[in-house]
Length: 267
View (cartoon, rainbow, N blue to C red):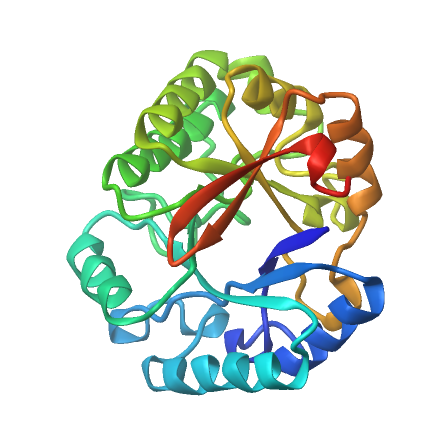
């Protein structure tokens, strides 16, 4: 089992050190984990949810110490890097400076949305939900086309309960999947939605089926914000993958992808 989406205390909104997550993964018998704290951004943008610029070396040092403490598990160095229009040059320079194994792409902020509106809290009474979803997915496609990222994280994070994205924005989803495949990226199955009001993974399983049918590889992530959440509800992912044996898991080293068949992965 692999958990490719872990946050630590350095994000400011998570708990636990790198070593705490590694210890939990070892207790669970995991083979490999990847830490993906949120990228620092210029001018303290959204500073409550990410590392400060001066903390990146501490982050890398904590990961290296955890490797020494727990040699029985592979511990990868990753980052969750927001795509925000206008920050492309910063992101390019930042990613080039550090030896990341994996870069997750997330969209939390959409260009043109006023301050205070983001994917977890938006209010646009003048717009239809379809239009709001579309603006999110168009931003995602822009990010994919930059070539800066390896994996799309929580692809339908924008969804609200009772309003699945496929119901209103199937064409936009098709465009996202086309862009992902062309870019040679993978898409994450993220279980964190199972402890939120949405009560389902990101993506919803019907969308996950489309991803597998499109022959796009997947990674698995808990999006853990505390050590106890490592591998959260991976039983749901295991059941899904068992029912879709044609799916492929993507593993990463120094941002190079290796594909694994489900029947060889331990699921």
